[in-house]
Length: 485
Image (cartoon, rainbow, N blue to C red; front, top):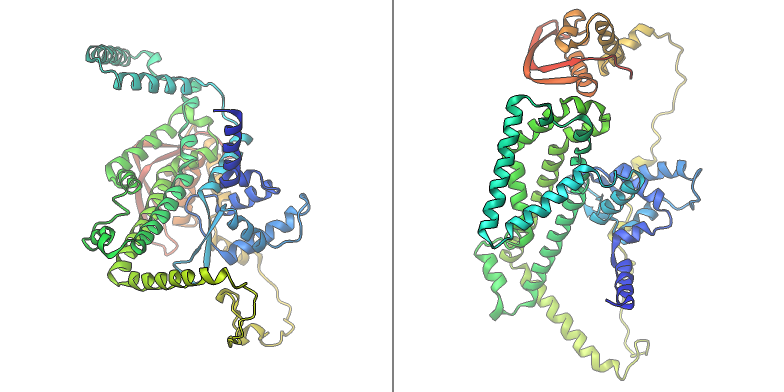
């Protein structure tokens, strides 16, 4: 391609691509930070009023460090919606509308995060993955069966040699800590999941719109779309995107595959090399399957809603009313075309039309008068002075919050005389003063700062706040070092 054609293609991409529009925005840092903070998690939606309030609070702080105008969060959100960075939809569970990040918004934030914390270049794991992918492609596309058999036999010999090394207990059969840590690229692949789910949803919405348009455009003699809908054929689920997503969703919903994935993640986090991972990475790995299930469930719900809506649109014969309206509009435009050649739009036709006295505007601009909003209530009386008991205030706080300070002290004291201590041993030495809350607090601390033995089970016992003794069997959680939090 010539430089001119390439430049024109790039210019069109800059004008049409929403991700690049966001990356070229004047206040990109503010936009990315606020949207990532409130809508960056997969499947996150916020009511429009709640998002406006949250961003207005952010703007109060950001104006001290950035050259921002006095525009409100609503004005910024309107701009970002028109730029296709966020999407506004009607709320399903409450009145009003919700905001969510579009696929372009997720992609732009991901690009910024990769630039802020660039990955290591030319790591061994990338080179190994690239070499394996190229080699596998060459084998799978080789028409010469003899060469493919030679390659498979060589692969079998390598596997047999690996099995022999494992049986001999050769330390080289296990990855060292540095190479194992390097190969944890699961999160790098998972970072694109929110954008993928948003992109699939947008494609389903477009496909749904295309099907409705095709229903209006076809003639009665060419109503194959109508016939298929009446026969119960789900055109959305039978599309290429629908079949691809259905296969992914079935894999996620399979209990065996899901359980195996969770067990593998738990095994990885229990390895010695995983101790160097930061807390955020460990939490992200632990919640990876849940995020995929949530995203899959959300898209599946949207797919079902579109399919039902399309079937209802056809079976209720609403499309016939829309066809009639479309025909009337086309006839009016056709009749107006010849008139435009002899009459100007602003020319006086000598005809008066009485208009409604109600201004034509969006229903969303109407504000109902609520007298309760202007009711200040009873006059405030001056309260009498009172004395509070500090111990009672502490007791009230302990009823609503887990006393992590007490639990951390108990763990650290227990580790002074032992190299490692389990949650069960901590409870034996220091009974749960808050009942089940103390047990949950210890398990939470062990998940974040300790280790889990998936092959051993402990019996945890405690006395509830009602004085009754209770017990539970859980995987062994234990601590190996002091907690500094």
